[in-house]
Amino acid sequence: MIESSTKCVSSEKKKTIGDQQDRSRVAQWSVPQIQALLDLPFPDLIHQAQSIHRQYHDANAVQLSTLISVKTGGCPEDCGYCPQAARYHTGVENQDMLSLDTIMAAAQTAKAEGATRFCMGAAWRGPKQRDIDRMTEIIEAVKDLGLETCATLGILKPGQAEQLKQAGLDYYNHNLDTSPEFYGEVITTRDYQDRLDTLEEVRRAGINVCCGGIVGMGESRLARAGLIAQLANLDPYPESVPINYLVQVEGTPLYGTEALDSFEFVRTIAAARITMPKAMVRLSAGRRQMAETMQALCFLAGANSIFYGDKLLTTGNPETDSDKALFEKLGLRTL
Ligand code: SF4
Image (cartoon, rainbow, N blue to C red; front, top):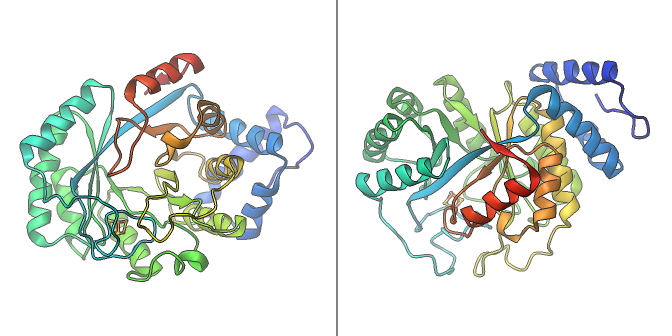
């Protein structure tokens, strides 16, 4: 499945690569295969990713999602990157669940700014039944605005995904974060299998899966290959794949981690695009730290979705005006 590192790819060859990727829903990607992709000379890797991208997507269009934190801080988990974990002193103020009116006002603003998907995050280990009841009311109201809905609420118990589906939830986000081997370096309060089980619940309920990871946490290239392999080998692979660049927040254990080279981030985007050709690959956290040129490289590598709006859950995101200016410079349209 790995293209030669030195030859140009003919159109016939491109078709073959595309056909192979299309079958990746049943074929397995091995970690060495993905590592070989990540090891390609940069121009060959970008060429391959862009070739596949053009077979499956409009290469000049980007989808916009807006993310809001509907319940902030005080989380009992210990994710080493997260300023919302109660055990880390990061200055994030706890915020109980927002009112329906507040969330609806944010959704209306997001829609007016051009977002097509409204993502709602809550800092829970997992939702209680009363949280599900409130979320179903919110999901129904946001759907009525004509926006796609996405929620990230933590670990789901059996039956909860079905309730969210009945309310009209389009996507559930639950990231694998990193490779199974590196995972224990970052999180100890929930297992990798817990995450896979929640993804299974989401799939079974018929909700689209949004699942990705974070790079720049001190992991090796092998670990990044391991993450992409896990994602690509989900059957089927996620419809939406957010790739986050660690935002280092003072007070979290990962603060002070050696910064990942920008090109490694772009390589990870390219590997996600090649192995999950139909997925929307989302440039997620960390965009504020990226130069415009790096963001442009990410689009060339196959990213075709961004979080839009000046704040992610608790960390900064580029201003919408600067995103509009960048899109203008690059000639990108929004989906
Ligand atoms: S990433 Fe989610 S589960 Fe982990 S500490 Fe933060 S809010 Fe809690």
